[in-house]
Image 1: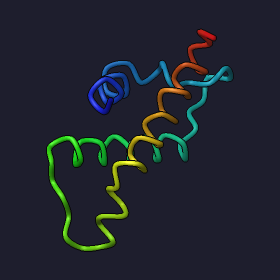
Image 2: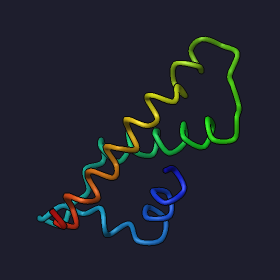
Image 3: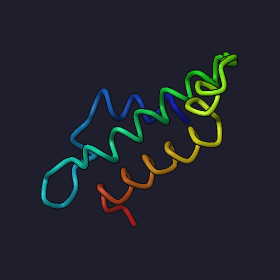
Image 4: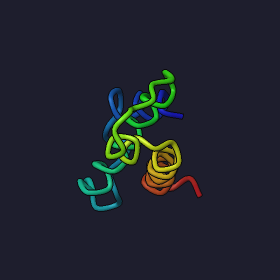
Length: 79
């Protein structure tokens, strides 16, 4: 789930614009956090420190990436 979302963000970032043509920077920050955590989990890396385990927890990554796909769908108005 991290690969397609990161490709959308890198190749065609304008697809994440809202109806007014603006980015929600706070939501994009959470989405990029989810993508990063998705890659960390995807390669099988398990942090030892508790703080890093919380930051890169797979459930948090999945939730933020789902937020990203939801924002992308709403921005493209495919619903």
